[in-house]
Amino acid sequence: MSKPAFQGVRAVLFDLDGTLVDSAPDLGAAADKLRVERGLPSLPLEQYRPLAGAGARGMLSVAFGITPEHPDFVELRDAFFANYEACILERTDVFPGIAQMIAQIEERGLPWGIVTNKATRFTQPLIQAMPLLRGAGAVVSGDTTPHSKPHPEPLLEAARRLGVEPSSCIYVGDDERDIVAGEAAGMKTVAAVYGYLGTKTPSAWGADAMINSPDELLKLLGPD
Image (cartoon, rainbow, N blue to C red; front, side, top):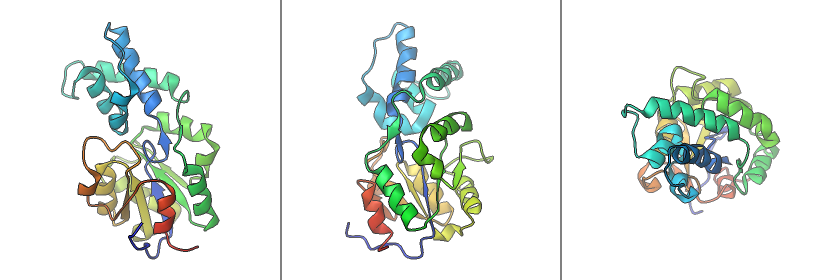
């Protein structure tokens, strides 16, 4: 990358889905099961993947074309959650290059953490099932604080748990709300454009940097 390395980085924080782990196959399967159970034809994963980072809202918008304002949304959301809880570890894995990136971050002595809008009931099984993720010094889920992203409080809570000033942290995510939250928390922000991205253009998010693969983050951290 041509961008210069960040200065004074003391910790790295990551979004979870679409940044560290590819959970789209399980999220899509949970939503698609609802469709099939209701007599609708199955949809390919490629239709679910772009909105996997938006959780139930994104998956139900693909599966049924509805928004949270729809009268059936709550019922379908709860059924989706039950389906997802049953298959949460079947097809989910870290993205290629994540293990090597985390190893390099740890070799440099930098603490790292996870800040996700995923509820604790879904976050903790994933963390426990993946030894790589257990090295996170802080895990903040969508219900850990009274707020979720794009509010900065989850990121500030993660910085507190790591004992690092927010201004010395980098936050890496694949959704615009990640960049908004990171900026509001006073952190440097990195858009992971290998992730789900949603329907918007990452270059318009205002991130301090964009990476096309996990190894590019190491270049932003500068020399060892």
